[in-house]
Image (cartoon, rainbow, N blue to C red; front, side, top):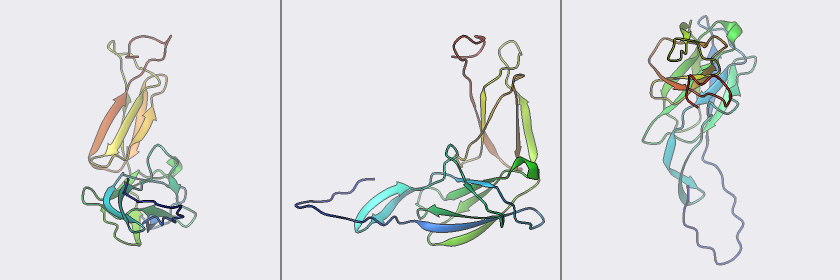
Length: 193
């Protein structure tokens, strides 16, 4: 974001980020803390921030394509987010380690106006699985299948194996799907390049 600043001489200006601390505790259905859970958030744009005395806008989020924040042995992690803007609330997605057998679970409609604590209770998963097929019904390897809780942009992705198979273990709910189909040069030409 940009703001007008008139400079007539050299200036040193410290800029305090207007972040709020969201303390997250992740637990199993029985209430046991879950360690090693990756936490991501949607991009919640805030148009009415202040950087010092200057009006600003921006977003602070934990994108699915960056390394996530991870819960410690007590199931806790701290996220630092900008206050919620008028366009969409924050969504935190918790992806547990596969060995837990628990589903990736999202906490939606999180309003952040100050520091706060939240609990995410993981649930038993439902599975979406299948194969990516070419025009002849053959499985296609190395294709990316994406899935995000509806309306969040918190994408999870899987790359198909040699038979074109993919698998997601997720919480029951509504999801958006996407497929990125790519054929490397020199590979079988039955998918786009």
